[in-house]
Each structure stands twice: as structure tokens, then as C-alpha cells.
Amino acid sequence: QSVLTQPPSVSGAPGQRVTISCTGSSSNIGAGYDVHWYQQLPGTAPKLLIYGNSNRPSGVPDRFSGSKSGTSASLAITGLQAEDEADYYCQSYDSSLSGLYVFGTGTKVTVL
Amino acid sequence: QVQLQESGPGLVKPSQTLSLTCTVSGGSISSGSYYWSWIRQPAGKGLEWIGRIYTSGSTNYNPSLKSRVTISVDTSKNQFSLKLSSVTAADTAVYYCARLGIVGATSIFDYWGQGTLVTVSS
Image (cartoon, helix red, strand yellow):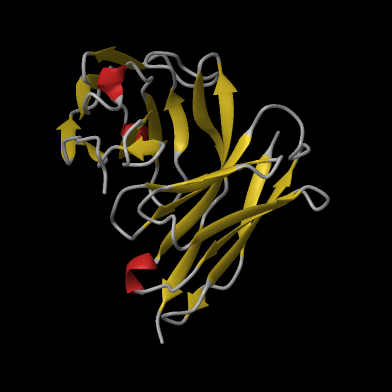
């Protein structure tokens, strides 16, 4: 029962820029809680991609960037590469009965 | 480098209890200010947080599962465990264990196990 809404899919040609939105509410993103992003390659566990809205862990290419505004957040991938084809999930903290940690519905990125 | 590994039965009968263990290596489960969590993912669907435990034994659960979930920790074995009772087919999923690390004022799932598929079927 995801409380963060993402588009089911986005696609782009190699080298292009794509963005993924993550829409929440006043009990999670809108309440000021940080948004994190995870990349899940096919058949593997999710991997932390962006934390604290816009910070990249060591080893994550700077092609990936994040931002947050109001009740929404976005992940941008610039210079899209074939290895970026994966599922992406946003995640935040929720102060309502939805549970402490909530994930987005997930977005499949396809490289054309 | 911290590593997590899930283990447990891959098949559970309806109405029975699902039991999984996560073994942590590359560091003590008791060191640092970390919570240890369980997350699941039904096939083709999104991620659902199940619950977390601190090494003191303090727990928090997803309200939607709270009545059926128990998470425990065994620091002597560097393990933490999940029990989910009265399972149905809706509980069929890949179950992940993960470390919840504190970074500044936020907490992130920074290390994950590879996941284990649990199927509920008679």
C-alpha cells in the first residue's frame, strides 16, 4: 500500500535526460522528511542511489541527481546509459498510520 | 564491508508462521547506532517496509502487519529474525533484510541482503 506515487514507466534514448517524480502528502514529504532513492537492477536487491533528497553515496555517478519541493521529489538521470535500465523507488518517513517508512510505487526506466 | 544474508524456508503453508533469519557479517550488529529492518516485495510489485529492531530489542512495525509480526535480535549470533504468523498467499514475496543507518537527521537503508523468496502455498 504505497503512499508515495511515481509514474509506472519512463523511457529515453542513450544520452538523454529523464526525470522521475515522487508525490507524497503532508504526513511524509510535505512534513519535511527527507526523500531517498533506490535503484533496483533486474533480479537484484535495491541499492541506495540518493539520500537526504540530493546527496549521492560514494560510487554513484554524478549523472544521478535528486531534488525536493513541497510534497514532491524528483530524480533526474542525465546522459542516460544502457546500464541505467532498472526500477527506481523513492522512500521517505511517514508520521501517519501508513507506517514509519514508506516507499514509492516504483518506476521502470527503459533505455531505448 | 557489511554484508547481510537471509535464510529460512522457501515454502510455508497457509495459516502457518513464516520464519526468516538475517545474518550480519563484516561488523558487529551491536556497534553503531543502527536499526535492522525487514522489507518485502511481491513479484512484480513495489517495496513494503515490515518493521525494524534496535539492538536493545526495541521494535517498530508497519501498522498493516503489526498484529502478525515479531522481529527479534540475537547479538551473540549477529543475527536478527522475522516471524510472520497466519500467512496467506498475499504474503508470498521476496523478503529482504536491511540495515537502517543514521545520516545526519535522517535514516537510510544503506545495506541490503540479496533477498529470499518465500511462497505461501499448500
